[in-house]
Length: 357
Image (cartoon, rainbow, N blue to C red; front, top):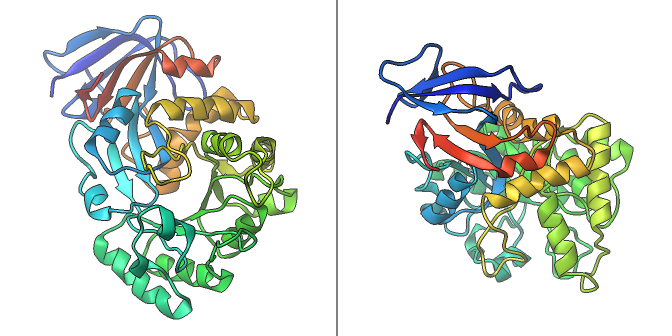
């Protein structure tokens, strides 16, 4: 792992770009002073960003993390794994996107994911009496947080978890020190998720725009707008409930207007049995553009993929270009605070001080 000084580079500091300066790192960490023998990289004309963070992926292979890394996604949060033994083993590997995982999600018996996406029958939560056993199993697995699939009972064959079961899952997870992320794609499921006390709601309603009152109840949202747009296109005219991407976009606009914390997440996955596969890494740049289209400023969108998820998930060692932080860095051409598409013009990527692109 070599020592490096990036010279003449503007740095994204969470509010804008600094004047051109030098950034040093050695031993996987950003340093305040130039390390001896450091190799220099000319950052002139570019912007140095903290490594990007995708708060919603599904990963089962090393290749998926390599693709994330190539696109400057240096941290990723797996939001449910059909084969958690494989996924959990991919966490925190040197020189790769740093992975966290929920392992198995909480879902209802005979639900859609069990029928079509490879989740085993025996993990289903049959009711309140099964909650403690399910949470205890996830704790033994060593998961980083809990994911709950909150399905809409109006959908055919949804076999949704009862709201009281969702509430019991949240309460038990919190007692074990786990944050809770709820999958919700309709207005009704959003209400169940927030009334149960979940910490983060992922996805965005496609059947209606969130009301201002409900939006104000949401603590944190990871909208996955790219997935919502893709689902609306893929299932146009074939869904039991209305599906319109404008509902998702306007819901994000409303969440933003009422001050909800918004995270960048893609739902990137390679599951051939899932509703829609999406590529790793590249889709996070698309998500940033869609967040800007939904009303966030470029600076706010960049924070949604850097410092904000660090605050939400409690990872103080990354997300900011500052001495002592992990050298997870993305050097791009141009100014993404003015043109968010500049994040795609990648020169170099470092993860823990190791250059991966």
